[in-house]
Image (spheres, rainbow over the protein chains, first blue to last red):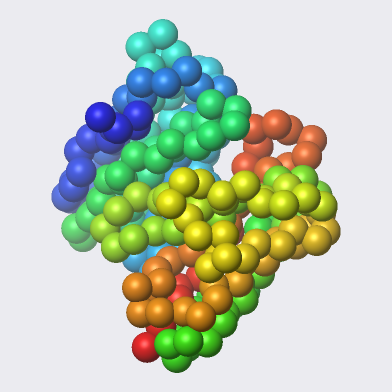
Length: 107
Length: 116
């Protein structure tokens, strides 16, 4: 069993739709990261969370420590949001990564 | 914001040659840098943890003589793939931990290695 589980694995949405990607983890963590991987392979760190909620532009990330669950939301999705979104958690000394969610936003 | 760079972004080499990949933290000092490898359609896999001024700690199954890591300064870590083979073709990513925040980690954009 993976320490980090993401869902869905693949997601196709129409432009403008509200998107949610979920991440569940089974280890005690000090922080959770949401990463974005562009089609060319480059990775961008979107958020680092240890509690509550963060917002950056159209992106919102929430975390529930008690439930060991995080969500990444994209409002008013756009084709340029098409990418792989990876959830990663750190225990302080080790990182665990989810397998990613491949998002395609259709114009 | 903090930036981590990698060079080169893409490299193609012949089998048997060695390739060096650089990871630099551009506006902060990183006492710890991490190297990851991504196999196609799989998530990132931690290869090793690099601490400035000391030997890297390799994850189980990663050959330290094959993947040489040097962290000579607080802003630079290098990964050298020695005697590269086609199975080493992969996407290599580094991240750097800001010394001021134990869990603040920034990722480089990655290096695509293709071994012919």
